[in-house]
Image (cartoon, rainbow, N blue to C red; front, side):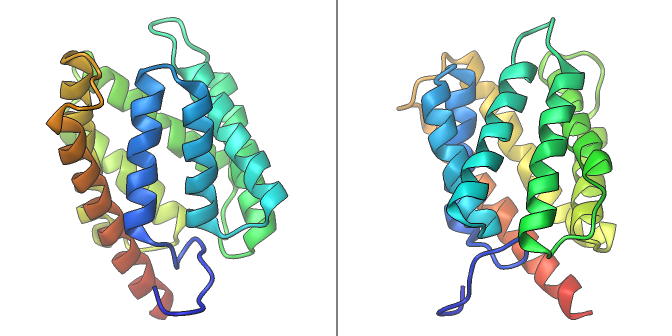
Length: 202
């Protein structure tokens, strides 16, 4: 990131965001919600560059959405969507950098959660459907060419597969799979940052 440039939806540090998301995913599966909230605060701060209060409020909605989604199989998709709607509402109002409908953004967000869960538990969802769901989310949120979003989406799905293997192996923080997941998430955000920067210039 160039010196002095404030982080935001199109100017985030992909290494920082990728590392923080890895921490959040690990905390999610270990049900360590305090650790998850800490990672979510860092992700929102690094990814959107909002003020302290809006960052805390937004991270809280991310936490609540994930807590409502987490139970399997009886979770609360509608509750998760509502929390993510509140999250996107705050982001849109605070940054002024994204022209999205928070309701639609929340629907797209939770849709890839749904497809990942089906893929994770071998319920018939193919990897390409999950990649497409992320392409749909990214291209909508960043008002970008869907094809430009595909490398970031694919790398994030690769990270999910590593995460799923890590969960099956017992969620050990010392497991090398977690580091591989971290590298894939950093690669995903690096590709996303490159794509949204190009989209902004076009």
